[in-house]
Structure formats: C-alpha cells, structure tokens
Image (spheres, helix red, strand yellow):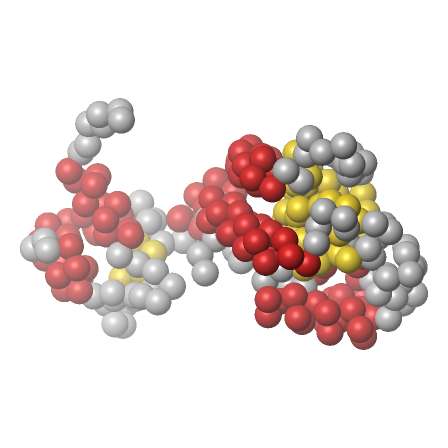
Length: 254
C-alpha cells in the first residue's frame, strides 16, 4: 500500500464534511465537535475556512451548519468527468466470467436503449448485439429496468400508444406494462422472457447515478436452454449486487 503523507488540518476538514448526511443535514458546532472528539475552537476555525470557500453554509436563525452549494458544483464536475464504461467494465467482465453468459451495459435515450458496452460469453450460442445499437426499451430487460423509475405520466408520453409486438410474448398493452414496471420497482430487477427475441432470456437491474436517477442498466442474457428457472435466483442476486456496486461508484446512496 502506498504510504500517503497526510495533513492533519485537511484530515479534520474532510472529517467535518463527512459528518453531514441525508439523515443529518444540519448540525450545531457543539455536535460536530462531540462527533469528532475535538474542542469547539478547533472545529470553529476549520468551519470558518470551509464556510469562506463555500463548502459549508450556516443558517442565520438557527446557527446550524450544513453543506455548502459549492459542493454541488464540484459534484456536477465529477459527474461530467465520469465515463460509465470505465467504471462498469471490470464489474460486467467479472459477472460474465462468473456466469459464462453475455453481459450488457446500456443507457436510456427517449423510448430506446443504447448498448454502451458488452462482454461476450465463450459459449457456442452467443448474443448478436453491437455496441452503439438501439432497441425499443419496452420489450427489453434493461429498458424496463430503467423505465420502471420514470413516473407513469411520463411513460405514457414517452411510449407510443401502439406497442409493436416483437414476438408473441411482447407486452403490447401500456396498462399491463405499467403494472409490470411497478413490480420491477418493488423487486429491483427486470426480466425479458423472450419478449424481444424468441429463445432469448434476460435479467437486468438498474444503475443509479449520484442524483438517484436510474440512468443506466446492466443485464445477463442467454438462450432459454441455459437461462433456466433453476439458475434464476443466483443470476438475479449477482446482477442486482453488481448494479449496486456500479451505482455506489457513481456516488449513489440508498
């Protein structure tokens, strides 16, 4: 492990910022000092510097401190510099090797999904998809995994009134699709059971960005002869866990 040379004052400043969370958005000076086992004068000096630089804000009435707006700007800068493929690829590669099936990464664009990355299995029966290609979202596992986190009104506006049947198993009724999406939200994963292509089954899970949006999805796909009901429980567990890992790397907090 690399031996980092740490600066105590910076360590303490970072510790102060880490005191705040979704559950604890505002804190008194005394609460921060107690949390970090530091005296109030030390904490006050550091907070004053953080406040001057926009990293900490203070309510004038309650005198409580909260995270500053400049952190939002820094967060957006970080988000814009992230390449989802760089983050996700090692994880989807690991999933593909573990299950020996094809794993995809995609994002939603309107009512379609776009394939961003793919790790192919070494099985003789493979999935013929290409990075950059598009598919209708309503009849794919990844598409439904992302659509599930868009409110119903937007879904109605987003999707055409007539959903084209890709196979005999495609959900073509929008009301039925909305029911399925609600079920996906509850379970945390989506399934494409020959809805897009006969003989092909897919399990997908959403990936959330730092704002909590289901911006991406990953899936495990394979022929129905291999993607059996007996394997489903294990595949679902792996794909949900992998999507969660990628989400965390994007800054998502449950």
